[in-house]
Length: 147
Image (cartoon, rainbow, N blue to C red; front, side):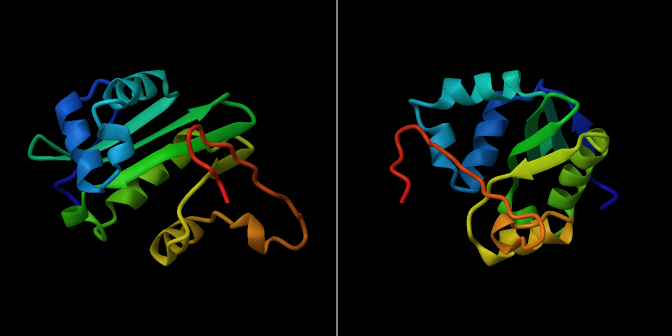
């Protein structure tokens, strides 16, 4: 898309960031209790990239890295009316290019077919399907009973 500007940096209008998270129903980030946590999370991220059109934030990705062995993609989101236009791919490719020298790139995602296909199309492998190099992902989430 030629009318999309990709920008690197953590300085984002916070109200636009909240609106973007709300647009994809990630209310755990935007409710009154967690708003300040989102701002801190973005500020503490290693890398932040965003997509803009006509001065409006329409996409966002952020991750953490030691810049040697691991890059962890924490969030990637695109406003619903702009999904399916390659913006998420642009954001993720930007992250992957920045951390191309890093050995492991990883993320956690929901078990929705659309998301699984998106990440697989960019070279990510679901650990549950690995056969030659068997590995597991382990997770703890504060305040959530994982079953």
